[in-house]
Length: 275
Image (cartoon, rainbow, N blue to C red; front, top):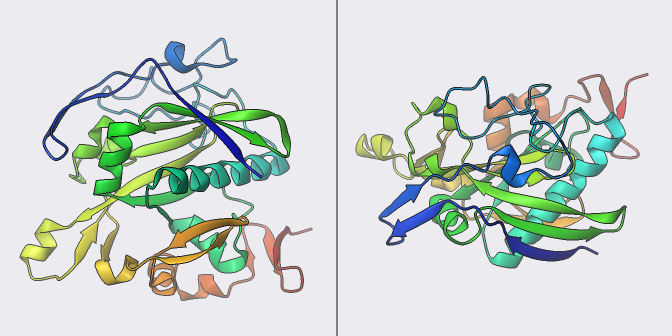
């Protein structure tokens, strides 16, 4: 059972104006503002372009260096990624924010409803309306969970990139619109926003959608969302999930049982490291 407590950090990204017409005042969630146990910032902020909001760690692109100074072991990473996605899904359901899994995370769902053991991050999507909602009411909130396998519990932070309002794919430094971050291990979930593709619709493509990371979809590919389970937690998945996975990873990825030094055990339904 997961038990959640929430609080707001003193820093914030201020939003001024109406819900659909807003001005964002950027307040950087820098190391000194959010640090937990580390004495030194291990993010790449010092070497990144100033226009980039999220700064991955200097030792691995799937860790937040404000909260971590090393990579986790294989088993530790799996344990904490599981808690990461469980707490994210529980929080989004609790606050009424619609979200669904995508990319490699959806591929893990396809195989056994679990995170692929070689993965080191989680990918989810939301609509633009949902991202507006998260930015307005939940940006930089801290959520404390009492977890059965983590005695002291764990704090997770929801952080929204103020550049989410810019849907132009040319903004290559800010492809990720928000993150759900484990403030103990530095692991995070990438949250991207699905938007109306005005250019494609003007050319006659009905229901065209897109993300800043240049993934393109049709409304019928995503909606209506289906309900399922992922890591023993209720989850939503895109409607035409098989086609989306084939399109992104090719058809053989749905049946290939040897990958990334792992083999899929048909009896246990688990990906096992190749000996």
